[in-house]
Amino acid sequence: NVKLGGLGPDYEAIKEKVKKLKLQKEYSRQIKEYNMRNITVVQRSPAKPQVSSVSRQKALEYAKKIPRPKTFLTKQSEQEVKGVLPQAPAGTSLPPVPSLESLWSRHEKEKELVAAFKALHIL
Image (cartoon, rainbow, N blue to C red):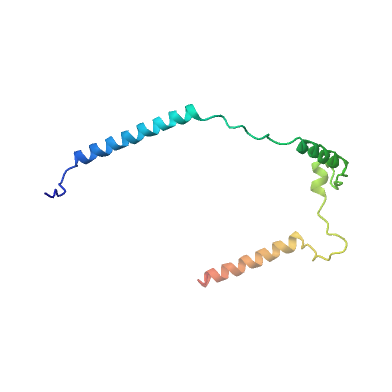
């Protein structure tokens, strides 16, 4: 007697699985209740020794004694900030900043070059 699979759901197998799940849940509930009744509260070790608070106090006192770094920039008005250009340190040699007119003329030349390339359909 071999039962082959049918086209529809196998209600008997589903009922067996549901029954098995209910038994598992009931068993786990009983174990949980048993454990809740019989577990004694475990004594925890003392949280942290007071030494850490002493060392923290020492660290805070040390931090108060350390000199703070001096800030070079003081609060300046917005007008002063806008008027002052950044300066390079004396020991470094940076190329001079080109003027606005020279940058504008360079921009116009490059625009003409790009227009020429577009006319030739290169870009």
